[in-house]
Image 1 (cartoon, rainbow, N blue to C red):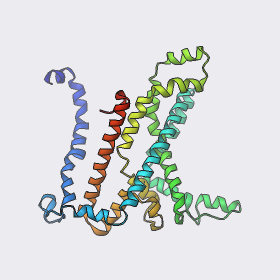
Image 2: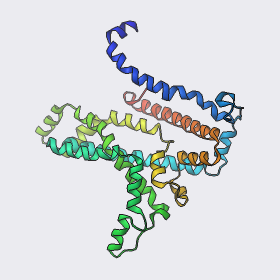
Image 3: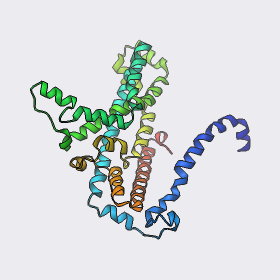
Image 4: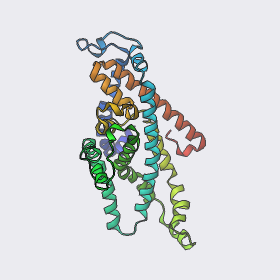
Length: 301
């Protein structure tokens, strides 16, 4: 270890900020998971509060909403993963096949821009699009002689709205990983295929897609690892506290947040967070084991 440190001391020093970051914000707070089994009292702190056993878990599972918010979380994340994968691959391939550098950079920058917008701004955009009285979409419908749609009272629309804006925000950023993988492919393979008469679609099918499978599998595994965690900012900023939409849009994170605001029960929120983490950990272990059995080179570990 000492020999390696001396040989690569600059690389080890470059790792220090990341190691400190993850230790302070990810590993050190793990001690707080004990709150899931305690009845928290502010005057006694985390470790001085009395034990509550599994009472905090019972609150979540007996609330009547556990199955609903869990299924919503899983189904939304599954839709995000599948649709995101398809769109990210498509965007990366299209950008890689573009001829001019200026056009390529312009398209890439345009697609990347939404990622830097906060969900608060996106929530404002959504509200101004779908508001019943003066939303842009309803103004357009009225101008066309069509009746306006009350989107904020119609839960059926929101599965598509949330799916669209989640992809709109993240497709440009996440496609960079696939674009980097495509750029790293040996160009002589494409040249040889072109000489043999392969068109652009055949080159994509026979060269690009097979050679980025390892990157695709790793990205899917990382996404599956958080399938029980809803994107709180997405759901809370776009839906807000509209009770009419809860059944269609409520995920574990938003349900726990509102419960915490109402009951101030920190132990219950800690128990739900632990439940999410354990289930996500089990899912990624199972998924990785399946991938390792099918193709060991593509697994995470």
